[in-house]
Image (cartoon, rainbow, N blue to C red):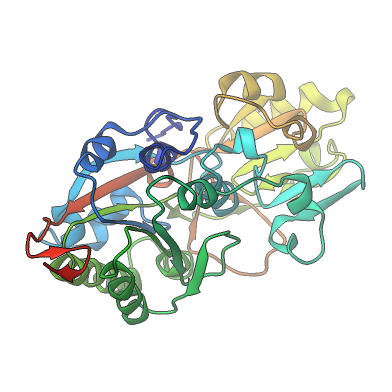
Length: 375
């Protein structure tokens, strides 16, 4: 099954609800379920991100009576591409790839005549300056409510909020308890990348993924039992599908020889710069050989589809795209430069990559306490 991004019901709308609650400007519409939960004006808002967890993955790797399953309230989509670079930058910015420009892990910079890896951008490439944006945390910190804003993560993230690296759930639990029982209102993000890493290494259904989610489930269950006046919003940014093998373009001369350079963006959301004289042949051969694996778009049709987002197109998006684009509709992926063998892949428009859970839980206000102090 295929699933396209729905920018009125994706994780961006969760971010918009939180930003709107703190009177911070938004671009994408809010999520009505989150808006309704925020009407109670909880003292603590905890936004949990279990990255790599699709709705299917939640149901396959958690028990029916678990905290996460019991508090599942709906579903939503990822953005496109449904892979780490596009998704984490959408989460941190509150806007879609169309607006922030981080389409994928490798981008062609025409001014340098070279392809740059986004993962190296903090060290050796100009991408961070070219695609600079303000993250969501500044507006929340400076809002009228003046909450304490903290980001906890098991992976380094480029954020303006107070940041703490939490390598395991015990550390995260203690940090959240300490933050939440103080006098001030809090907005705490807990980003968990471990499940995504394990899914890549061991597959979409493995003991390792199940055990990781069991630990995460216990974390949120224990927090909910200890904290009052707290709203838990738990989401994911993208899911995974099983890796069904690589496609090596070099083994298909009719395609490989038609290119100016190797594909860019992502292995499962691939941009091709095709020589104009070979364009018709490239599309014909591609559709005949790989039409069941990838959906092919011309550049114009791709942009018209608004698959990257629906508002202000970043000025560099047009530069990053070749004249042909392929979106994965199966478990196969174009070979990349990475030597790592993966058992699960992301970035395409399959249901397992695109459809995500929305989990929410509210704890009641303890009338014997006022912002953590006895009355």
